[in-house]
Amino acid sequence: MAGMPQRALGVRVYYDGSCGLCHRTVRLLALRDRAARLRFAPLHGATFLAETSAAERA
Image (cartoon, rainbow, N blue to C red; front, side, top):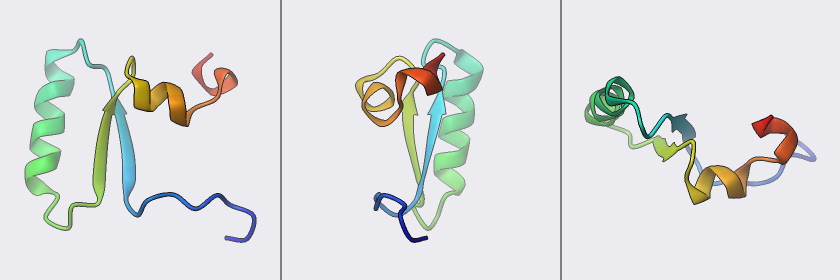
């Protein structure tokens, strides 16, 4: 789309890094992601902070 920032191809999936169920789900999704389109990042990590605004985190 015009005016949209260019980002790496794929989809960023944020997850709760303290949650066991979330970790298991990430592993399952990663195994099924044969095209390697998913990128995972914990909600309390540097990637999440860098890629989201304070308003989005509120």
